Amino acid sequence: MITTSHRTRRTIVATAAFVTASAGALLAPAAAYADVVHPTAPLLAPYYTELDLTGDQQVTTADLGIATAALGKTADDPDWDAVSVIDGDHDGRITVTDIAALSHRMIYDDGPFTLMEASVIDMQAAMNAGVTTSVALTQAYLDRIAAYDRTVVAGGTRPLNSIITTSAVALKAAAQADAERAAHGMTSMLLGVPIALKDNYDTVDMATTGGCGCWNGNQTSTDAAMVVGLRAAGAVVLAKASLDEFAYGFVSEFSTNQPAGSTLLVASPYDTTKTAGGSSGGTGAAISANLAGIGFGTDTGGSIRVPSSYNQLVGVRPTVGLASRDGIIPLALSQDTGGPIARSVLDAAVALDAVVGVDPADPVTARQEGHVPDSYTTELSTTALAGARIGYVASMVGSNAATIERFNKAKETLAARGATLVEITPPSDFAAVLGEGSGSTNEFKHDLNAYVATHLAPEVTQRTLDDILAGGNFVTSRRSIYVQRNNVSDDAYQAWAGPHGSHTTQLAAGKVLVTKMMDDNDLDALIYPSTNAYGTIGTNMRLSPNTGLPAVTLPMGGTGAGQGGSTVGMNLEFLGRDFAEAHLLGLAYDFEQATHYRTTPALYPALG
Image 1 (cartoon, helix red, strand yellow):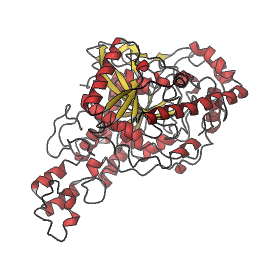
Image 2 (cartoon, helix red, strand yellow):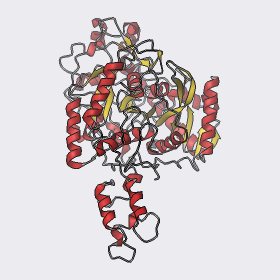
Image 3 (cartoon, helix red, strand yellow):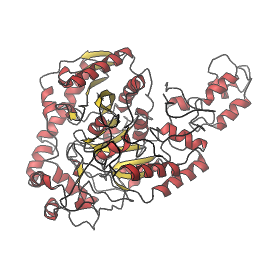
Image 4 (cartoon, rainbow, N blue to C red):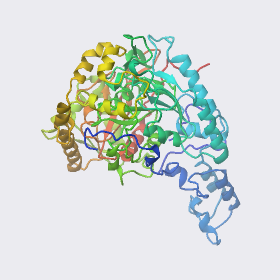
């Protein structure tokens, strides 16, 4: 459903619902980014394309012109086939009712536009109508970053600290997007939409620090492969978001651009005394506080899903191999994957379309051949849950009373939407799947060295963990962690993440076991709470990375009071089979449309 709660609609407004590598393998040296094969996706979900009369995969004024000229035509006319698709009531005649229905398929809104909680549909509709521009959107987000990010706001306790840097060329990129729209119309659902990237994605216009002061000067000469896809889709790369240094933890503490020995922490916009989660905490806080349109993070052991849960957002941890990791500072390549963090399921699906593709520089992406749908919006439907079988393991719900209450309510909602809930008794080996550790210790040095060799700017002098430890410009409370990682020998790495390593073997076994659990019970997905409010639940975060299977998390309701009248929430997570992201997004979309649990942080209202 396209929400109408935050702005008035008039004239033509779209308001209806959609109906519609081996573990531990090295990334290859950076190939030409033109070698990344991004699938050609339709511009929009079927609801917006199925009545197209001109062949451009969208409904525009040109289609309305054809329809108006056809007013009164009947099935007996010789050219009926050219317009019959818009005969929505199937009465064999093109009527005013048919033309009015066609107009609702347009993404166009000349009513007032409000930046707060604006979706990609809201932005595109307003830009198509000329109500706003990408330049205006980009400037508005820059203004919010300047006003809110490093400020202790009224009613708050500490700053968000969600943004490390903004792009000096973002407004130029936005102007180019506006020129593209003026010349060719809306060529992409991301055209002109401002994006924030976790600061471990390489960008040619901003340094890529990994949250570490040791790499303040890492200005790469290329974009990460996923960033190439975003720019090709017309997105405006607005800012680099803060993160837990080198993506290690869940509190988002970073040392970038700070005096040696000093650090900053990212705060949740719902309660600034609390962490925004990690490691993609800056992305989570920024998107939730409406400092950018859509965000991207990375997830090794929960780093997309934890900040999504702490900040009432939709997070997608894709199948390992769906999106290239080339040009992203690694933590542990056996489990690393990048994905969107957004305020809605629709936005996450649109964002995912732009970043998937086979990349020779990341051989594991070859696995996706034949598994990528035309678009990740194609299964977004308010009937997606009807007939679905959803499993859950009772022990994964935990013991927190508020979490139990929200999870039980979520199950009731799923059932009311037509899903069958199935309690699963897992096999004994399921404990080993959840209990397998992260590769962040045994793989970090090995994988970081590969990034240094292929991507780190030559001007950066601290090129090894020895150099970083000697330089002292990092989160110094983690010195022992870096020393431990630095002491991992190549033999230890191979025994863990090599082709026959214990970790490699366990991840493969975990995928087989959990897939069989779903097959044996004829399940569409498994569900569980992503987190408690500002706290993780046991080993829930490990299920997706320890199987390589995709997960989608989204809000499942409030659990308490934050600051300034905000409501603190938590998320429900859907896990599915390899490359089942479109199906998971469809299930999540149906749940989202039934509940609309996300709330806006009260501490960060519209400016002015």
